[in-house]
Image (cartoon, rainbow, N blue to C red):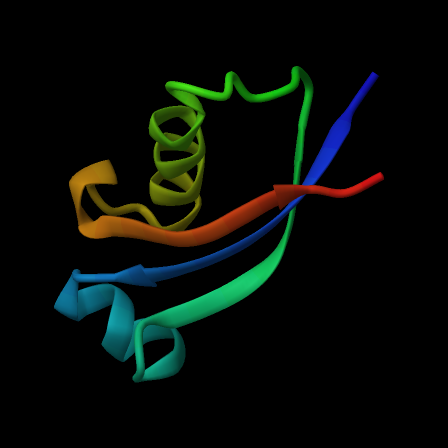
Length: 69
């Protein structure tokens, strides 16, 4: 069963900023197949977001995330 999360993050990658929004700040809902772990969940979330933007996960900084019910 999929789990949905609200996430607010910024990208530090200049190509991502130019290609997508200009500001590099994003928010939205992400749907994952498995729930995130409380301790290492942001690593998994950063990896997924980085894949979507075709950038390094180190260029993603999560500002806030919360599971949607």
